[in-house]
Picture (spheres, helix red, strand yellow):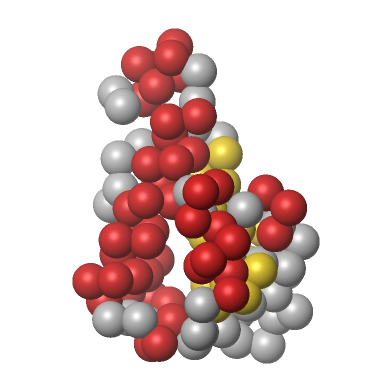
Length: 116
């Protein structure tokens, strides 16, 4: 998937919001909490970074094509320098899971407000 396709996909996830922060990095949030970052090509962070389920972080951060996300590894985020490394189906599954992990951690009232 291209960054533009990832942007469109993340924007369609339930209650997702999109902002641009940190020198042009596209940030997707749910309930005010980040779940995916899309960086411009020459930015210091990886091209795509996303939240990972804590129980999968260790294995995923060492898997081929992945690495711990700059600045966010302590929060169990992983990064992809080349989003084309994964098939569209695989990448969409990771992004849906990132969204779900963040949404599940929101307070019950916030989830209800967002219809989650």
